[in-house]
Length: 240
Image (cartoon, rainbow, N blue to C red; front, side, top):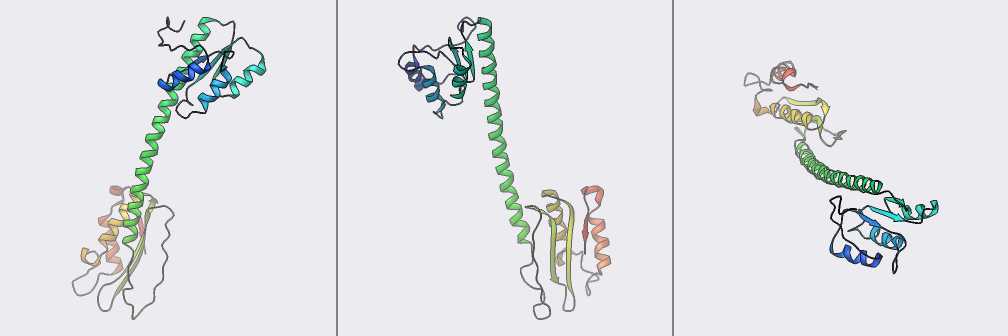
């Protein structure tokens, strides 16, 4: 029946022969009787399901034992289906095709899931790298240790985000402090925060005035407004 339907078939006379065949070749499906000499179908199915190499193979029982309890025992061993004899040829082929299709879909889903896990792992590695970079921008020292005491804690709500701050000496008489928060979370917000951080470094020019005195806070904010238009970045940040 299976040959005529175009399937490639391996045959065994009992459970032991079936297990020996499975050592050499892994089929897409096992169609097996329950009552067999030497090793019955229940015992063979248990061994198949306990072998990690074979556990995913769908097993269909085809048996004259048609009581409900027999079916329950067969399914509890891990079989995918239980067809009582006498059987209809069309039903056998239909169920075989259904379980082969389910097996194919399961394999495709497993493969897709493995690919997603790998992609997620790469994303997490990139986020960890971004977190290390973002933390490296935080102040390393007090800008005027002889004049002020400063304490801070940086605890972002996500691995990376749009929150950053800095404090720096502008000249002998001026210190600058700011806290900056980009709208949203994640990599996009973090990139904008890093860009704003770089713009606010003294050497970038945004915080310098006429060359002798620093720019006023109002001038700094106006320059930032021009440098980070919301319609370009599709996000905004607030700064104190």
